[in-house]
Image (spheres, rainbow, N blue to C red):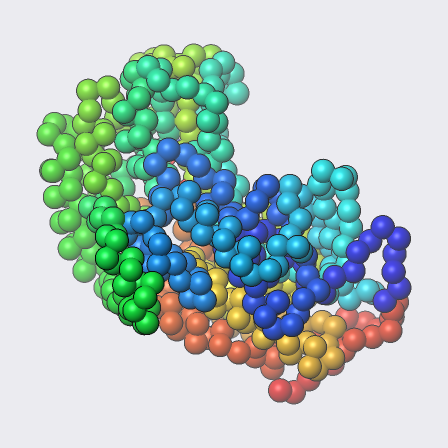
Amino acid sequence: MSATPGRSNVDHLIVGAGFAGLAAAIKLDEAAERDFVVIEKDSDVGGTWHINTYPGAECDVPSQLYSYSFALNPEWSKVYSPQQEIWEYTRKVAEDSGTLDRFVFDTAVVDARWDEDEQRWIVRTEGPDGPKEYAARTVISGSGGLSEPRLPEIEGIDSFQGEIFHSARWDHDVDLAGKRVAVIGTGASAIQLVPELQKVVGHMDVYQRTPNWVIPRNERSFTGFEKAVFKNVPGAQRALRSLVYGTLEARVPAFARFPRAMRAVELQGKRNIAKGISDPELRKKVTPAYRAGCKRILISNKWYPALDADNVDLVTDPIQKITGDAIVTADGVERPIDVLVVATGFYVTEPPIAQHITGRGGRTLADVWDEGGMAAYKGTTIHGFPNLFQVVGPNTALGHSSMIFIIESQVRYVVEAAKAMRAEGLAVVEPTQAAQDAWTAGIRRKMKPTVWQTGGCASWYLDKFGNNTTLWPGQTFTFRQHLRSFDIDKYDVQPVQPPKSTQSPTSQEKVSS
Ligand code: NAP
């Protein structure tokens, strides 16, 4: 193709330097696909583990599994790792990989547009040096499913005069000591930060809309001996990792096919409540009325004792409005505050980045998904969006195990696709509508008996049509099996053409595998 002034040509443009983008960079590099750039809006690698710095931020997936299979870490301090340690791990993996020279930080992708003539994605970015443009053969989006904070739409929230911030954008300059603080939300982030805040604030109101099932957590630190074994005994850490993996996978049938088995979890949750809370009224308020697993099962030993503390009130009356200095609930009670923390989650089923990706025919990913919900072939590629690969795409998230397993599965598929394109001389690969529809129909079928659809709750797993377009409805090894090779027979492809070709996109040439 002819060079356009001010535009950089790259083979692959990776969006995001979290676990997904970093894995894509490392694995493309290993596959000798070295002409790539990673665009990251944050100032460093790590994604969610660099951005989420709220007090008490930790992973709720065991450390042994929450790492890349190709970069085990014998130094994990605890069974569940703290945020800082996970971020340091990603930083070290990035440094060791030798790929950091192709990472561009503090730079956001503002627009990605498929150019039919060029057979490339034209990607505009905005960074400290101003706007920049790339022409990329492929775009690999690792922008994260839980990256865009969702602020609650509550009357008057904009009029609040005190400090206000989202859990994922913690303002460390705000001193909470002795302050009157409100936390809205009782999800995975809130249950970690509330116990830490409880120790320092004067008074805290925690606003709960729906209680979650919260079961005990194994808080143990690894001993020096264990770490030495992980480091020095060949296979020891991998064996433990396999054990953890198998234990978590054994839970899948209860989520996916036999939700009644979740009663065992509910029993654990009720015991956790009884242990952590003495007040019978409060116990009642925090006990969910839906099947465990319908929303993400949370783990904490500190959440219930924090709610039971003298300086904390759990408020379950719906919030009516927020004033300049208080929250008013539907029963008319006004509770004055100095600081408001919103721990209300993220845009998951309508990811904002989809508005900035324009495929064939000038349609954005948001347009397409708005019509029928998020969908992608094998959670990764999307009809109408050639050469776009979504890592952590639709129906790839997990409620029971480590996302890094899924990420590695998808990255392998992407690398296989890149290799196939090079070997076959292909400029364009795009999943057929039929392949994507069949995949989505299979997911919907499997989703029907799951606890996420039948458990009697509203959750962010479900979209506006009531479909679960978020989670993978099975064991992770079946997902990996599906993505073990690039199935080119499910794709419309186009060979590399001379520039400014007038060939119609619909007259695609089918390459037999
Ligand atoms: P979340 O689980 O979606 O929780 C959001 C909370 O805010 C819920 O309690 C929700 O109530 C409440 N809420 C939302 N809008 C509200 C409104 N307008 N008024 C009152 N309450 C409102 O979000 P999150 O806690 O940030 O966690 C999101 C996900 O991030 C987790 O599920 C997990 O996948 C991930 N995460 C993981 C870890 C980890 O340790 N690995 C830690 C933190 C987060 P409803 O339940 O009624 O909607």
